[in-house]
Image (tube, rainbow, N blue to C red; front, top):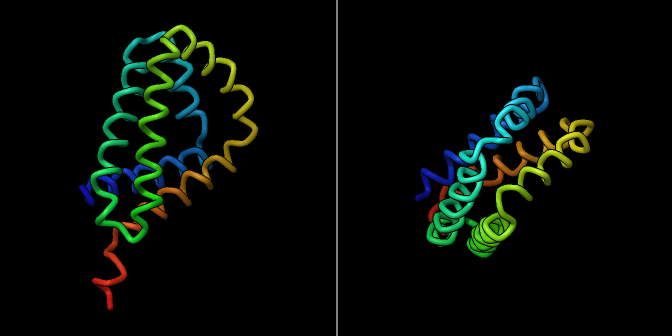
Length: 130
């Protein structure tokens, strides 16, 4: 489980770099695949899986309460997307993307910090290092 969360952290770190250097890749992908049902299903499944993994793996981290909270947050987001429905999801993403584009650098930095935090949080507990 630690490996999955650490891999997700690396992916977030990489995504942050991409958002800073070439944001059109991520925004373009989302815009081009917005009509696809697979993007909606993928968004739900990823949040469900990550939520469960974060909750289960929380004990192995340096910050189990924070990681468990993030897991529950992922599950809540997945539930919200399910109840939202695909049509409202598409409408929401289509309305949000133009408003987020000017902040791609800030979002990229946040993504990098979040990814770095996840990597750090699963690099061994404090008691193991002492």
